[in-house]
Length: 175
Image (cartoon, rainbow, N blue to C red; front, side, top):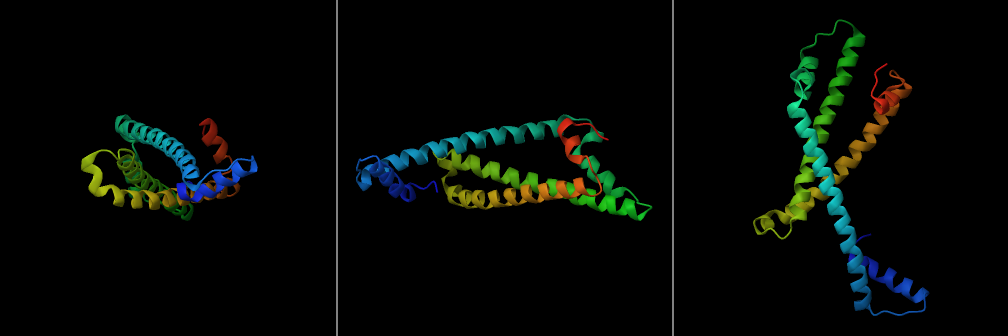
């Protein structure tokens, strides 16, 4: 969709519909400029996501011990459920927290490989550029899958066991 060669015919068609003609080389120049603009937008969004991830890491590092992610996981792992409901809740909680860990890992990989690609002119990154591009492309699908699964899970819990979970996410208050 954003590759120069795929947009050359579109540029030529658009110009022809306006009564103008363009050679393949002229259309390629226009299509390439379009691709460059999309790439710059992609880089800026990536820098923003890298900043948000950095903020999340700083927040995790500076919050009180009992609120840290690893403390919550440790407490859930050491919790001894007495009822079937507690066992089910613990299992779901651990599944969700492990999902978050997986998400942050994949997101970190995506950010780091994206930064390698964004700094394409840095010579010492040249040997890992191609590998970073492939990893970056595949990690995007993992992020998309996580988002879809997360939304399905939230809606499932909203209409099931935890009605009001979405509104509590929005305003931050627990029921």
